[in-house]
Length: 353
Image (tube, rainbow, N blue to C red; front, side, top):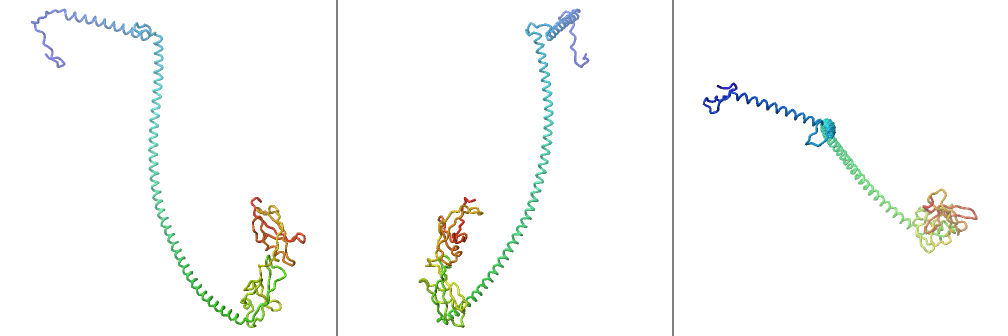
């Protein structure tokens, strides 16, 4: 007959089995099994109690020689380590949460930075395009201004060229007029010379007083001038005169005196030893008062002729001071009869500050 769970049961043994049938065998085997189970349970309970007592420290295990107090201390330390580990784990968990929060914050900041960078790049591109546009406009304006300047310069150059050409033409015309005038003047001069062949100079004579340093004034009278000729033109075109063995052609000036006589005047600056005064001892007067960077020297002028102009002679007499040549003094002072005419030189000196 099939089992309740669908598993076929084995068929009962045949009545012809070789084993003897004993009615007490099933009951006796079941009792023995219950006895052994109770025995095993008692043993297990005793072992569990011993194990718990040993763990609590009430009973010492013969296989373990660690004292109970030491075990308790070890358990206490172990609990402390567990607590520290738990606290450290909690700290790590908090740090991990904070790190996660910071990572998220960094991510948001990175996103904001990227957005700001993208906005900056966009604005930069827009500014660059605007700058290029402005630069192109400025370049065109500069080119227009340069072209305008070039055109103005070209017009100015053309104007200058026209003015130069006009000036050249005017100069050519003026030169032609000047040439014609010169030819006319030359013809007139030749006519004056031809008609003034009988005009002559008296013997030049020197003035008693010197005109300036090394120079004396000489004069002569112009005689027999034709009445229809200009006396100044005749004077300017006369042959040279001889003074000290040298020929001097044109007078320095021509003039009429109160008697209506034409007088020619020459300033002769050679072979006049009596018109050469000299400086006496030069004295160093130190730094020039009121003038920074100058040193003053003074000397008395000697050798002036009687009746000569002291101021003119002093102002034209040269001097050499400490190897430096001076054509004239810086100033002259007339200090009376005893001191006479004194020349003053202001010499540059960087030590006078």
